[in-house]
Image (cartoon, rainbow, N blue to C red; front, side, top):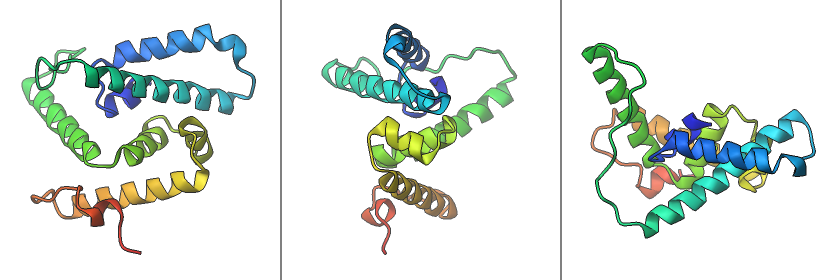
Length: 163
C-alpha cells in the first residue's frame, strides 16, 4: 500500500497508508465478497483517499519544494546515492505519465492487481484500464529507448501514440 502511495508522489505515504487501513477497519462490516474483491476494495479506498489528499494539498500553501525522503536504514553512501538516483528517475518517469496511466501502472505493478481489480478500484471499464496500461507502458518504453535525452512525455504523441 505504501509503495503504491509513494509511487503516486505522496509526501507521507506511511501516514496515508495508516489512514487507509483505519478506514478499511472501520468499514469492514460493510464489505462482502471474496479475497480478490477485498484487495480491489482496499485499493479503491486508497485511491479515493489519495484523491482527497491531493485536493487538500492543492488548498494548502507549500512550504518547500519537496520533503527529504526518510531512510529507515543507514547504508553506505554509495548505495544510498544509487538508490536515491534510481528512485528519483522512476519518480520522474511516473510524473510525466498522465494521472490515469500512473494510477493503472502502479496498481497493476506495485499492488499486483488484475485488470479487473484495477477497473473496480478506479471505477473504469476493463477495456479503458487495458488501454491506459498499454499507452503508459509504450510512453515509458519510448522514453527509456530515447535514453531520457531531453524529451518529456508531455508530447501528445507520447501520451496518445498514433494508431
